[in-house]
Image 1: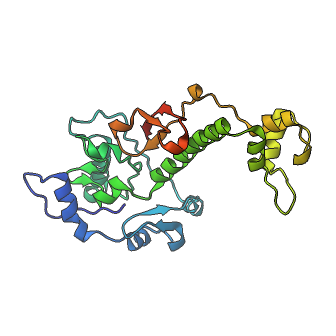
Image 2: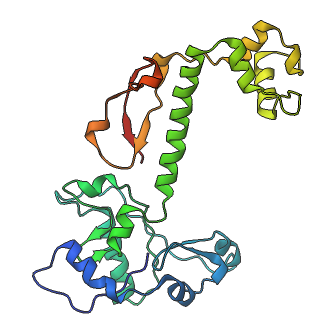
Image 3: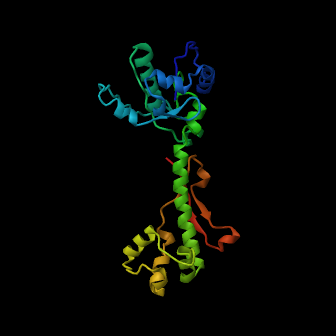
Length: 264
């Protein structure tokens, strides 16, 4: 994210969002900003006008350059209103860059949306030591956390769907769905052959497995009581911490108590 020094520092200090929105009109776009820092066009991946990912190829290109100094800000107990690691980190960078004229880059993590809705607010810092555009930073940024959410929930859905199908279908029906005929022929995929190996089944012709082998292959036999994998959402929504799934009529009474965790 790109930031700049505010010329008009007001007293008393306005709210965080007032400061952020007042600064938005003067933001430098990310492409010229990156070029001014010596980054090549193919070394950044823009996400909109004001943010981008930097390729690790920069590290290789600059391998012969002298290393800089690395300052880690960690383990700070925040104030009741949330001024902590980010505010301190951004303020320190401003002091080094704007006041001591040192070359400085600030690296902070992509924030969860969760704290945004609590009393401490978002994770962009505060006052005149914050990251802007604040709304983009707190609510989406590059979308990496949303990708984690999708991957996690895909696995959760796959687990419950598999248990549902195993509870409602015969071994033969499950086997047909897992190894369907294509062009009049059935073949195991590479991952299915790996499963056969784990089960100690040596036959590789899908039509020659015994009924017992086909049943072992087709069923995972997951015990619902052993499942600890929960769905996630990037919001601290307390009403989702404990839920019952499978209450729709199509689920045929296959209900289970579970819940949501926060993504990160």
